[in-house]
Image (cartoon, rainbow over all chains, first blue to last red):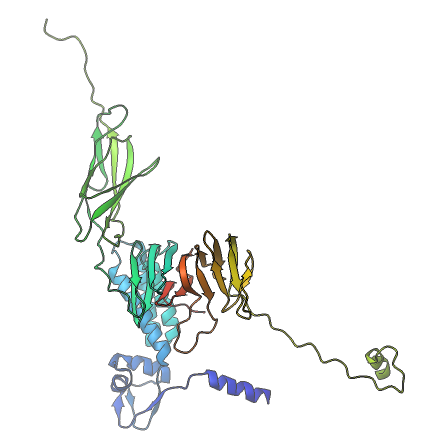
Length: 297
Length: 150
């Protein structure tokens, strides 16, 4: 009796398996096109039904993929593909994410949708903007139920209202009015490209009161940027930070040493990611001053 | 042997002629619901209303929060709500939040917390492995993993 009840409970919680009956001889690709809307789904049907051939005799009953699981896997793979496509080609984790994405696609073709979703999700997590940083965000609900979301750091936060979802990146703020979808995102601010000094350059200056310089940092202008935030990290000591409206910054004289710097574009309601880092080194230019007796009398 | 075993079942002072009263039914097994979060760092006037009650009670640090419980902060007050997956939410002053249900209603998305009024600051230390979902009267905010496998 108890087993029968458990069986009924199991039946109630297990989604009904979707099936299709092939009514005329057709290829798996044709069945996939008809049922999944994609002829490439043939390999999934083949794996799911343990078939050896691509030809399906009329009257064959084929199991169809579980829709929710398949959609979840498709969504995870789309996100991962997008993240890989947008990743910096030099980023070390891009290769790892790309390999994971391929693995996810193979799992999908083998109709192992949950494994595919998990693998694609881990690929996405490797490359998501802000991955590795804590996610900090603020939610403010006003008197009329309006919501303001501000993302301070970490990967994008997703805001959903009225069946519309949009990501909010770090440094961005979105206001959602009750009964309305979130406002369309502004075009993402691209990070500026550092121009000078060149990567790894060694700059020599005669020391003035123990300091060297000045060095001028320059970078490309970014459309939509109102300001630029520059950060200079010395190998020792405190970083220098400055926000300015121009695309160059003349640094104050600095001690000899190695410096890394990057710049972010700041728009009205968002901030770009930091640019690629540049390195320069300041060296003392030891000019030998010959002070001696003049040759003339 | 059976008699010896039956002896302790007889009520004390019961004579052989007296019919022993039926043993009390076993106490029903009360399943303690799993807390969905805990309250920490309570400062100032912070009140808690249990889903099972109508009264606003004084809240204190360490209290477990169950689904549909509500927490309210007054002017100058604050509190922190910690979720089992490590996500934390700091309630600012004059905020009102509700702890979401474990199982969402049909057509509703799964959330952890509902902010009905005021401001909260949320944090996920490792968003690659954690997630936090906050609903408000006008939106649902999801942070952390895009797809969460539980």
